[in-house]
Structures are given as structure tokens and as C-alpha cells.
Length: 551
Image 1 (cartoon, rainbow, N blue to C red):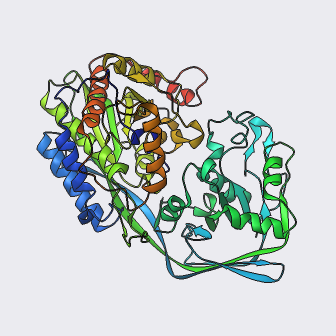
Image 2: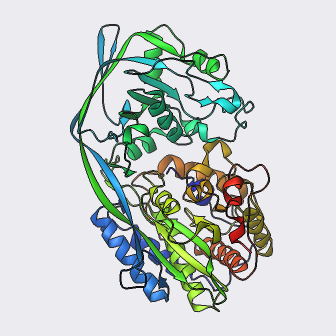
Image 3: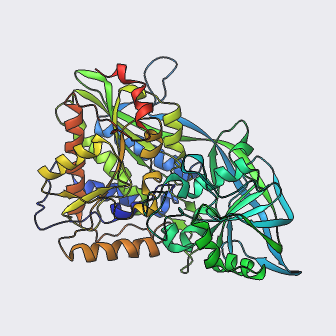
């Protein structure tokens, strides 16, 4: 996640003006691959599991059958493997998790997954014990010198647990110093944990509210109470506080009320520069649990169609193969998080695009099909590739990411995760017009979708990258139906066992989205186009460093 948003991608649907896509995409094969990858036999495709072994084997088998070339790690005797090793640290809680708050001398016991969702500690310790740590409310937990904003005001957080609001200070009002409704990186929970480590806090607890988080408590619980992964770090405490987790809004409000404060009033204060951290007198926090720490090696899967004229210039299609694996049971007792839409569907489309390019005329530039691991653990597979690229980033033309594609039919429109200031998005819009489809800007920029999918690690290192999403303007039901579908998916299926393959999915959406993505790849691969960031974009300077490599 660190991705989602399936948001728009979930609604890959269509319009009366949208005709059936050409046969370059075989929707039945996309559906077949989606069904296989999201079956119970694949156990939810968690990294470093039997599900990963089955998934990687299936992807390699399908890429070979498609006629792709292996494009992963270099082999000692020459040539390439089908995979790229991704070394990760895996953290899991062992045994009981004891969590409590002492409120004015009365101990409140909290249950993991109910009042609180604690992540397994990622600092390398084998047991986390916190005893009666003071609790401090730190507003949105933002320290942004360029915006003259500091929620900490010199407060010493060493040995303390901080309560922090999710999203940006602008979320409630829609205007201010943080881009209005559109989330900045300061609004992401990942940033808040990073800031916790910088501030020296023993822990940060993000206060969950559905609207600013963009998903319900079930998603938080399921994403944070299973195994946690991270890249291998020399000094993990520089990136993580010992305690990272989420707490229910009403539970946090109760702690504030016991200390004499009103949650809503403090939230209003936190939306201003004048806010100062508030220590909750008479409230302390305790936790105790064991941690199992292991080093594991997961796999990115990489295939390619080698370019005929410019093989060293590469267009990338990406999709993450992983999901949440086996976790806490839902109301029906189901423990397998199948991840059919998220993201067996995107992975299946990646395979089908590989088939389409392999059987067609050879593109002038190389097309790389990269299926990454551990997206659900924090975009780790794509982050690892971006930091350890198999091919030069300077001559990587662009990245077209897919995170959930078209189960419900045709859509008049399409979108991207976040509204990126780059010409690659312009190219997508231009190709979309040739398919009689129009572009809708990310309908929920406040959800921070730009920071939550596998294009983002590429963007951070300057590579033009977008994450495609199908539209909401549906042929049957229009925008109202699209919104209803997206809302229902987020509430009832996103990061829940109910995200399962549905044989009633309409193949037309898969065909239309796949054809659009194929044509965009063709345009990039058979031209001298070098997409770029627009003036003022925060990633442009990084891209400009390699400008001499692009001719």
C-alpha cells in the first residue's frame, strides 16, 4: 500500500462512446490469470511464503510461454535470470500482545486489532517493552521548514508515545499551506513514522478516522497486524521508532477527554501554525510483546521484449504481485486475503501486455515487464529496484504502473493515481482520446494515491512514472454507479478476504484498459519521445541530472 489506490482503478468501467477494444488484449486470458493468482492455492501471495514461490513460478512460466526474454539479475556465466533478488527484513509478533493505558490510575486494557493495531517492531529488537510512557498529542506530526510549520515546537519526545492525526492540516478545510485537499507526503502515515524516529519518540500512534485515512478500520487492522517487512537497514532506529501503530479515533478521544481536552477542539488548533504539543497529564501507555526477526529474500520478476533499434532505451510496465497472505479471519472465518483486484488483476494485465508485445512487430525500444514484490509492505520491491536498478534510470523512458484494472465493464474515462505534473500523463491523455475516452483527474487527491503505488519510488529518483486507473463514468449507471462501486469496494473488500475473483466480471473493461495501455507503450517505444517532469515539479531536478544520457 502504501499504494492503493485501487480507488479509481477499481472502477475500470466504461462509456457508450467506448467501443470494444481491439483483439490485441485477450480479456479471457487476463481473467484466467487473475483467477489463478487470486485462488486459495496461492495463499494470498505474501512475500517469503509458499504463496510467493507459487506466484513467482507461475509468472516466470507465463513470461516464458509469451516469448519474453529473462531480464532480471545478471548470471555469472552471462545472460539474465528471470528474477531480481530483493533482500528484506521480516518482523512478526510472537505470543500475546499486552497493551494498556493508565488513565488517572485506572488501567484500560486494549485488544490488538480492536482498539489498536500495532505493527511488529522494526528496530531489530526481539522484545518491545514500554512501561507507563507519557502520552503527547502532536497534532499532524509535521515538521516542514519550507512551510514554516513545526508541530513539535521543541517538545522532547524521548521516552514518550505520541498521538498523531492522519493526513494534512488542510484536509478538513480544503485550503492552506499543504495543497488544500490534495495530500502532500506530510499527510502519509509513512512520513509520520519517519518523523517519529527523527524526533526520538518511543512511539507514534496514528489516530484512525475513515475520511482522512481514505479507508476504514478493517483495512488498518488487516494491513498492520500481520508480518511487517522492510528493506535491510544498517541502523533501523534511524527510520523507525520502536512502536508504530494505529489507534481508533474514539479511543484516542477518550484519552484526551480524561486529560481535560476535547478532540475536535485540539484538531482545530492543529490546523494552524500556532499549535503546540499537548501532554496528557495522568495518562500513560504500556505495551509488551516478543518479536521474531528474520532476513529473507523475496523476488521481483522481470521479462522483456528487446528493442530492434534502441535496445538500451526502456519503457517499463509494472505491477505488484504480492498481497497480504493469510491473516485474521473475517466475519465468515475466511483467513486468506486473495487480492483479486489488488493486484492479481494488474499482474494479469502485465502478463497479457507482455504477450501482445512479444507476438507483434518488434518495438524499437525495449519493453520491460516488472512484477514487483512487497508493495503491500511499503512499496519495497519497487523501492529496491529504484535504488538498485538493473538498467540505467537515465535511459528509462517512463514507468506505466497498474494497480487494479477493469472488472466491471467499459468506462468513458480513465485516471491516474494523483495528478502528476509530467508530460507522460499528457501522452496518456492523448492516447486516451484516440480510444474515445477522456481523462478525469484523480477524484480523491486527498487520499494521497500518488504516494501509494509502485510508480512512486521511480518518481522519487526522477523517472517519469504514473499509475493508471480506470474510470468512474460508466456506461451503465454513469458516474453515480462508479462512485458507488468504488465506495463499496473500499469499505467491504479493500485489504479484506472478500477481495476475491468474481466470474461475473465484465471482460470489456479489461480489453479497453489493456488496449489503451498497449497503445501508450507502443507510442513511447516507437518514437524519440522522452517524457519529462514539468517546471516546478519536485522530481525534475533529479531527472535533469541524467539529461545528457537522453539524445
